[in-house]
Length: 280
Image 1 (cartoon, one colour):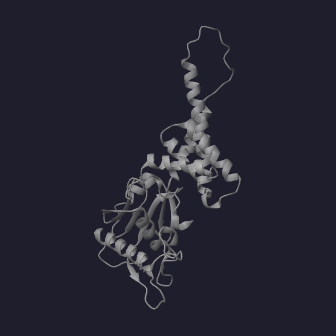
Image 2 (image 1 turned 90 degrees about the vertical axis):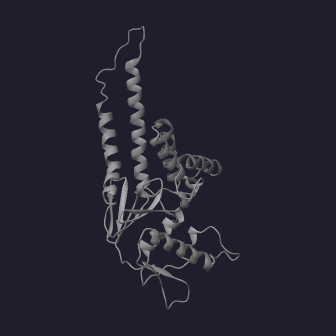
Image 3 (image 1 turned 30 degrees about the horizontal axis):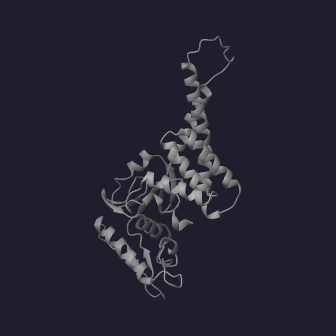
């Protein structure tokens, strides 16, 4: 559920790997609303509307059972799910109508009176426009706003701003138009520092426990594991030519801790329906 997209490479998303893993997940445990939502989205991208409709419908049904809270859809995902579901039905109806006009039958048929297809197209257009306008979120220190893919792309050239881009197949750290690829864990860790840390609220290994699957015999993350991950993240920041140290050690506390010092402004871009390990 959490890592299937990255089975082939830690740097790049792979839709085929994601689809395979999600289908395995629901075979093991059917009550996974978010899995069906993601399967529906993958089908929708491929214009496989019949399969997408089944998956979105299953996502809503399992969501209503209010079980398995860890894998429920967020409110944004649930809202999008209903829009995608409606569009799937409308696309199927539209295609059926187009096929109907192509039929060559040697019988006299009575046409349905006052049948209009035009409202279908208006519904589809309205839903698609909403989904496009709200497809992505751009998060800064002052808050977040929805936007389209094009609006996100227009922000990539911002100067002296740390940009963390989740919108493509790769997770990118961008600074003054210089790009550096991040692993999934590195991108999540940097996002957590940018949003949640400060000198008054530094990050310890306990804050990011869910990000690291390996732990010691006591179920704890070894301090060295946490430290090494921060060191690797600092290397990535340097590769992006962010020469000023922006993730600092917090002194005067009882355990290893770090924080983002806000020397540069930041912007995080991601799909509005994306979920993160450290938010769960």
